[in-house]
Image (tube, rainbow, N blue to C red; front, side, top):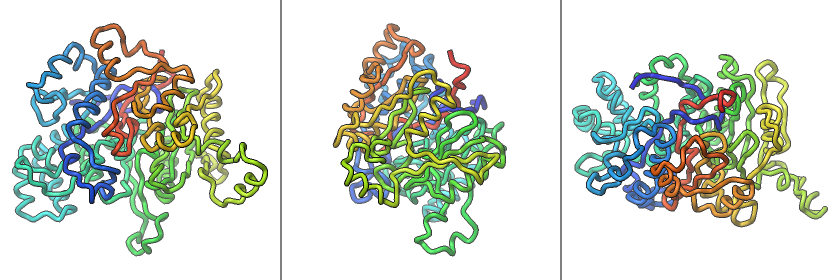
Length: 483
């Protein structure tokens, strides 16, 4: 696999290449008592999450990004005698697409180098407190098998060496492409330490990224951080990709949330401004609650003028426009707004601009930056009806992935949000129906317009992440170059 285009300048440009990781066997080892420690809300059924849910995601991605790998092959792929070989990174018959790129395969590639294998195995064994004998045994494994073990923690005989990293399916959080640079992230939770380590080795050592090595960005802990009291969370440096969104080539959105700290935002702003990678960074500070986690759990972009968002962050709710006078006055005395938005400009960082609501910011982006001639439209989680709004936000109604402008993937369980998409003029099609039409040739990906593709999600939604979380775009076409 050779290096190629690395460029992301928006959230909605036609997607051409991305990094993913399909659910591995470690998801089937998560036990109830450890689920929340490993950042899952519940245990999942492995076979269902693979065959009936994530495999549909892989199929859709291949049809849109690498159709030659899948067109006309569904019957063979789905033959029970093949045992999902097409979807297994360690199998000879794995699809190995160069556009829908599997992290486990990239890891196997770099482990073929003896020097890299020695260093990475030693590093993993150090953070997982493995014995010296275990370290030697791991080093002796064949690269593909070793990559599987380093991710799942499970040996070929079923023994578990170290904890699973089930959140590795959420590739957005481990890194993000900003124009032609890669920002490596620093996960907030200990459960994701091994993910960050494996990702760092892949980006710095795989040939796919060789020509971009001097454009890989990292942020570090503050000086003497280890001497600071435990309650000084704001001085910690943690950053996850769900809090980073490219809006235009010169404008980045950056969240401060449960997972991304003020100090991390501070470092990212200074780093990107110093290198002149972007000119504007808008910081969106949301409550530190598990309900929200990242900014991409409360809003994502669908088109230049269309956004899906949680109504709790709308100006109506923040300003209590529907409240009676007494309630409005009492609520106005609150010290903390649900969201605080501050926009910094590279040439005058000391003079930031504030926005009163998330809607005000997004309208400004759509109309003044993306120059949309159409009125800005908001599609609200759960159709903005309580309790469906918060129920469906919890199952990632706001966390959609744009395959191209106006064509997005979402979960089929969010019924009221789906109604809101229809009301906004979008067609809705199930993944199964779309695949049948693509295979029959009655539909082509390029002909789809204003479409929500609803994906099976009963088990995936238990992991608290949608398709925006399950993607790390490496290349999107610039919006200005689209037809």
